[in-house]
Image 1 (tube, rainbow, N blue to C red):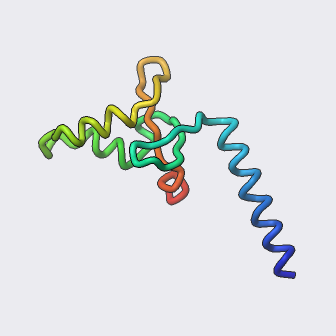
Image 2: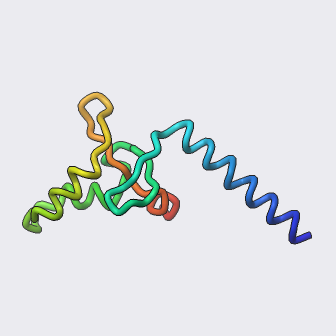
Length: 89
């Protein structure tokens, strides 16, 4: 019985990953994690960092934001958002 659940779980993860890869562009985050290139507004951590105007913009934060950018959708920036973060939403 446990073997059946393990196979089901692995198959489910495989199908979910294939869907994710087909619908989104896979990328690597600045921290070397697997990510997905999505609109900036859809990645909570990077969006929060990019729109935090109360904290001084350090060179480290600016470099992180620049390295996170992976394209555009029209004029809207896209960033490499970690799969781990997206799964926790």
